[in-house]
Each structure stands twice: as structure tokens, then as C-alpha cells.
Amino acid sequence: MENTGFIQAAWVARALVGAGYKAFFAGGCVRDMLLGRAPDDFDVATSATPDEVMTLFGRLGRKTLSVGAHFGVVLVCGEPTEYGSGQDDAVEVATFRHDGAYSDGRRPDAVRFSTDPREDVVRRDFTINGMLLDVARFERDGDLDAAVLDFVGGREDLTAGVVRAIGDPAVRFAEDKLRMLRGVRFAARLGFRIEDGTFAAMRAHASEIGQVSSERIREELTRMLTEGRARDAFEMLDDSGLLAEVLPEVVKMHGVEQPPEYHPEGDVWVHTMMMLEMLPAECEAALAWGTLLHDVGKPATFQPPQFSGDRIRFNGHAEVGTRMAEVILGRLRFSNEETEQVVALVKNHMRFGDVTKMKRSTLTRFLRMPRFDEHLALHYLDCTCSHRMLGMYEFAKREYEATPVESLRPELLVTGKDLIAAGYRPSPQFKAMLEVAEDAQLEGLIATREEGLALVRERFGDPPERLSI
Image (cartoon, rainbow, N blue to C red):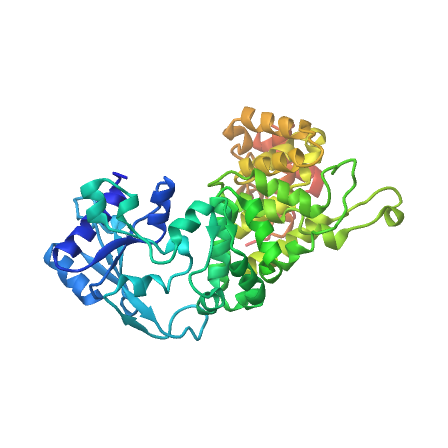
């Protein structure tokens, strides 16, 4: 446990205890330590009020930030150095509290600070996140088990592999609707099951998840997709009814048959879940979302054999899926940059079928798409979870790795300035002119600016006479 986060948080806890307050590690870090996992961060819960926390650490020369004093939360920054203020090593310190009503389904309308750690724990979300660690005892005796305070049965549920709400799950979810998604994420990430009563409450209250902001929903879904057990998470989301509320377009993949000669694995839902299962932990978020949505257009474009004339077809599903992905990502308030990449993955995932027949210029433009490695990764997953024919993948990967960057994006022989200098007036046709010249350059058909301009004149005619000044 001797890492920077632990050392900093332990120092904070010791300082609080030394000043006469109660202080413990709290929440997920205790859970992860008991599981033998490296915690992402270490939080401290204390009987000191926010003002007392800021006063104490101010005297000790540490900067503090009031990030939620109303809710009892203060950041205590690390020791400042010549390289920074120490804010990157900040420890979140929260005062023990009792919460009032949650009228917005997100945050308590009012809180009452407490000096009783038990009162603080019972208002938390799940038993496995409700344990405390007496840091001083742990450092003194080196016995992690003996240093844990457990008022809610978290140790037992951790051993049994169960995610259980603290107290009445309906009350916990009424307080903060996002806890339903968090419960699914914890269960999937840890390989646990959700306790029956907790799962029943999720189903009963799934329709209320819409009260949570789109941004918070997006972040939870993204974490589910990128923590290494995406299939488990999305199957639980589906079983709970939450998926139908947050991503109804994905639920429609159920039962949409596919041509068995290309998809022996089953329907669109099964195919997509198999791909999610292969996503590695900490994969890029855009790749994960592209995997989830790459076939989202199939339900709307399904054509049975008796309609298509030969086999099941999904004509235009990439184009339809592209438009649907734009709507979904907009609804979840993705950034423009991430939206652009996910949409590109959906839009282009079928183009690999033509890579061996593409002209060199077309192939070059394909290979130089931003983050092309993610396009390759998506195609690999797509093939591996269906017909397993990887010839197109191997060809594209070979070409991508063998083509120097300067060949993918060579300095243009003909530019817009060259067209203007040659007498062409700027117009919408410029784009087509430049593409013709660049294609010829990529194909090796021209080698100079003069040859490029000659090709433009041949395709588009001579420039109009210059206007007299």
C-alpha cells in the first residue's frame, strides 16, 4: 500500500487524529485494499467540520480547497514543490454527516454534520463501499482485517461477492438515482452479483433514471464499457430495465436475426455482446462506444430473405447507424471530438470489405483517417465475433503499418493558391479540383505541380479569362 496516494492520505488522517478528531479511510479504497487491488484514490472521513479541516491544515502549511463545504467536503493538497502547488496529490476529506431529504434525486437538500462514523456510513450507497479503515491501527499493527470498521455487513458481502444496498434499497435509489447505474458498474467490474432485493428495487425504479443528468449517465456508461467487463455490465443493465431507459436503441438489437453464413453466432444483440466481452480494460472510450453502436442501424434496416430475394440484408445500416449514433451521442452530451470519432467508426466499419479492391488513392485516404488503429481494432472485433474471416483485417493492418506517414499525407503538388494563380476563381468546384489532383498524386500519375494543373484543365476546362483591373 506504500504509494503516493496512500502516504498522502495517511498523513492527512494522522494529522486529524493528532488534533483530537476521528479520521478513517472510507469507501472504495477500503474495499479495494481488502480485495488486494490498488485503489484509484484514498478518501478520508472525519469528525472535523470543514472549517476545522481548513484551519488545521492551513496551520500545517497545506493548501485546502472547499469543493463542497455544504456537504462537508474539502480537498487537502499535497506538499507544494517547485513543480506545483500539490493539488494533483489532493486528498478528499469529508465530514461525517447525516443527510436530509433528496428532493432532486441527486443531492440532499440539507445535511447535518455528525461526530458518529456509524451515522455517516448508513447513508452511503452499498455495503461494500461502507467500510472504514483505522489508518493508525493499520500502520501500527500491519493487520488490515483488524483495522476495518464495518457497521453494515460489507465484509460479509465482499467475501460472498454481493453488491447490496445499505438499508432499504428503494430509499437509497430515491436519494440518488445514479446509484442504480453505479451498482451495475460495481457488480460488473468486480465480477459480483447484485443482491435480489437491491436488483428488484433497480427494476422498480429504472424509469426514474431519466432524472439524472445526461453527463453523469454518460460517465457511468463509459466506465462500464472501459473497465474490462462491458458485456456483464450491459447484460445487467438490460435485465434491470435500465438499458431500455438510457439506450433504447441498443435494446432493439434483441432478436434481430442475421444471415447465418456471415453471423453464425446469432442475432445482433448476441454479436454486439460478444464484441463487448472482448474489449480490454482501459480501452479508448471512442472504440468502446463505436463497438456498442456499430450495428445500431441494423434493426431499422432489417430485410428478411423473402423481401431481399436471397438472404437477410441490412442495406444502408452503416448510414442509418451513423445518424442514430449522432443522436445518441448528442443526447449524452459527448464532446465534439469524441462524437466525431465514434461516428466515424460507425460510418466506416463496413468499408473494410472493399480494401483489397480500392484504388491506391482511396486506400490511402482510408488509412489516414484519424485514429485509424481504432478502426482496425473495431474491424478485428467485428470479424472475430462473427465469421472469423480476417483477410481484410490483415491486409489493411499490413498496409497501414507499411505505409510511411509522409506517404499517407504527402505535401500537395496542387493547392488552392495554385489554382488561383492559374486563373481559376474560388468556387465550390475547388474541392473537386483539388481531390482530382491529389488522387492522381497518390496514384503516382503526376509528379509535378505543372502536371497537376494540366490534369485539372483537362477535367474541368481552362480557367476563365482574368478580369481586367
